[in-house]
Image 1: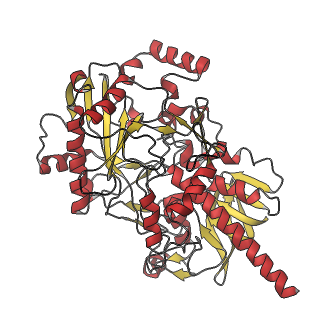
Image 2 (image 1 turned 90 degrees about the horizontal axis):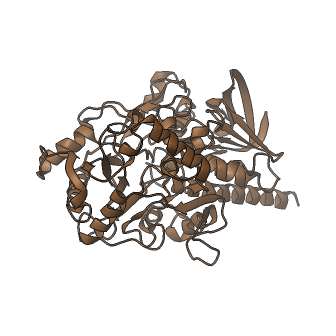
Length: 543
């Protein structure tokens, strides 16, 4: 099989690339997805993440190594294993991040990645129900449907009002000019159904004659002639196949699989790969490093208000909720993972928010174990810009062997200080009316954990978990710690790029799905520009 472009991974960025690179009809494009088709009905129901996470058919089901920062615990890291990737199993929350995030990337030498550069790409990608061509920042005619939360609960509304009463402001549009404040979330939904990257970008394009979509197609390794990537070897439904790329291979397999593919193919640290018997192509010690994630602490409050916990407490209630969704595309089944959010500062001297809240009208010890038997809500809080960075450790040259994940959570004082103050702010807001009058008790951390720094930090280390935002392992930059350059070309080789959340030099201040889609948009522009420029140069030489 031979193509102009081969895209590895049909996830948040990969589906964008499949659409954009095949749009003009000039290039033969293939997109390979190691998972299956997105035909499982629960994928498309907003609340379906309860059925897709920890499901081996739709989730790669990674687990971290025991991590010292969380008291030696190993935690689950869900990643999408289906068309749409993690955008098919995530919580549907649409967050761009702060303008300062992207300006920070530019300050690190990543030309073309400032907020001024990427804001038009966010706008181009979205079909926001309140956006328009005339709006400076919010798009109204892009492929990705974005809607405001319409299904809510009193405990969430009261918590947001309490935050305002506690001195925090109400955000007008956290994806607009100013992120700071509390508000309801914006969601990647369309008419009560999930709008994954596959729905938004791949479905409209997959009938094109020049686009080939292969599912159950797992890459084994990239192929090279000298320093040029010529294609790859993959296992497609049990058959080993070789694919050639006339122009480029683009890795969009995510922050765990993209660096793993590079390393098993001989791009990585020579002292780590040689002992595993991997033939080297290029020595780069940065591959698989700079692993960043958002760690969430999850205070839970028992309440006298009704919550999802009690609304789904028996089969009859569940059946009625199901009928409501079938009839109206509304009700609890149309809810995202969180309803309310807040981007706040832990200190007044900060220029921008450094913590984010996810307010949920339900509670559970683990998301795949079902809700508590009592009525409660969760006020999850995370640090937006952690200093701590971990790494991936390759265990063999076989892609089927998962790398060891070392998150290195809470390894710096700033990270510890920020999450502790985040929990304290949670308590202050929840202790303010109108939500305070409906709180029966703090279930966790609970009365045995006071406001003492060490007590809170110990609880965080014991109970915190990921909010599913791994990034940074194929860092973009211009220094020795970079894996790709600002045009996303893998340093040291030709014909190979990476375009997904792994290229983030610093994690964005918020959920990572929207930025990953933006990265796909940016990558498509860069690839087409370079391809056209090369063709023009060849034509000039021949003239």
